[in-house]
Length: 470
Image (cartoon, rainbow, N blue to C red):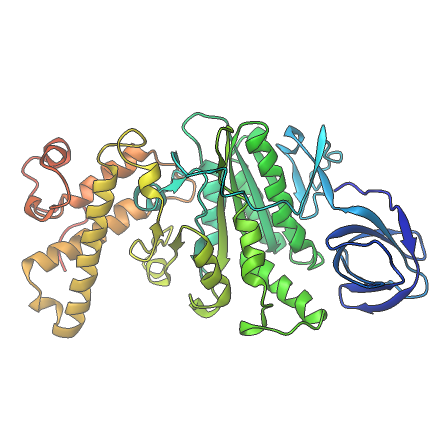
């Protein structure tokens, strides 16, 4: 992050409260203006104006206010929002959540700069998402296909491998041979988790990756900048350099908790669960920066990761995220207990734009039909499992047992895969066909006769994967 020279400075500090600093006697200061703060030793810190009212300005100090005193602090305002250099120099770099190098390299430079605040994409010029982003993860590619320009979050619970899954997707994702980049913005990670992310992302060529790491011991205010810097870098790579960019942001719950902490320090009236009333609009200002622009090459695809406190999907963070995004990938503690990775609950997951990125001319002609048939069979297997709990497994019909066999086969042969396993879409669909072969051909009513003739094994009216014993 580059530092701009202040065009006016003030020393009348009215209050220091948590991460906030209140300056008196200011004129011409606006919301979101960038500020520099110097203490008695001349050490420089950085801040953003949260509020300006008459001659008062409330500044959030990115490095925190520890060590500052009201009598020896100088605050300078630059007259503009925080700007960062943008360009291809970001590729291959590992930086803090504020954009400061962590890899021992020089400061990131660029031919131009851009304001990190950004703007949601104008709906008038927005092009509908289309074409797939292949992640190499069967549970996503086969059943909840990610589409270029889409917002598709991962909903998880503490203790599940959502961070590993997000890093695997970032390491493996591709756009069918077209120029592709990944911007990974991590928020509130422990040092151990950060090391894991860096190790997994080491599989991806450095020339395609930007990594921003906001660690748990960094000032909480830094988390405000991390997703905004990530999206600013991604927008330039996509809409100026013509690349398809996947932005992974984990964990958005950490971001929202930082927002709640600062809101409490400002004395704002809390809303649900003590989160600020503007949480929805704040999240929308981030999520709506992704997409495709009509007539402009490139796209920004967004995959936010969030943990649901207590597994509560009605919690404000997942609840509001669900209103803004186009589907969700839900991780399951039950599948985790069965030893399945990634533990994606297919029946709770959904990609609302899948039909825009999968099917004839985009992936494979049978892709959508195989996905629909697999989900229908999984639903039937779940009903059979619920019935078995009521009447006992011995009372199930032969058809119910076959659906249970399909459930086991699909979970172990399709959903389950190695943490470093990068599957092609053909491999994923081939595995799905093998799992479907555990069902009689007469049950596969969502598949055409031509598709069955081409892919259903001849004479496969008995289970071929995983067995059918209850």
